[in-house]
Amino acid sequence: MGPPYGVSVLLITLSTRCPQGFAEPMSKEQVDALVRAVESLLAGAAQLQARCREESVHASAMAAQLREESERLRAQSETVQLDMEDIQKRLEELLDTKAAFEARERQARKLSKQL
Image (cartoon, one colour):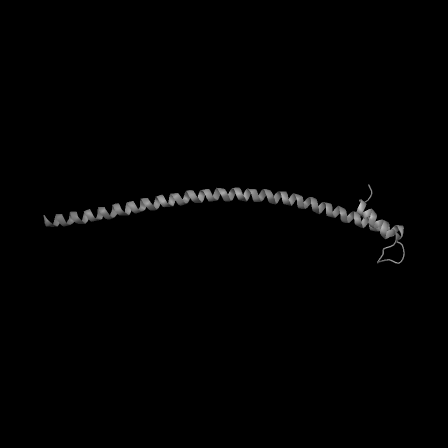
């Protein structure tokens, strides 16, 4: 398999004469070395692109997992908040009952002393 079209055009241009570069045409060895270097760069770029795709898929999966966890925690937080409100209400009722009981106890002691 030969180099991609864009690389071929670049190599043809460089092998004849670079308009702003070399005064002499490139030798076959130089062209071959350039082809190898460009192919190596393209292979590296393809590997990086594949790795980036994999990382993107992984990051998307992690983001979805975090969204689910966040929603679960939000629901748990709402449940805990409702439980806390219920506990607070019951505590207030118990404190009211305790205060009423203590008041009756004091009243009973007063009546007991009067008798």
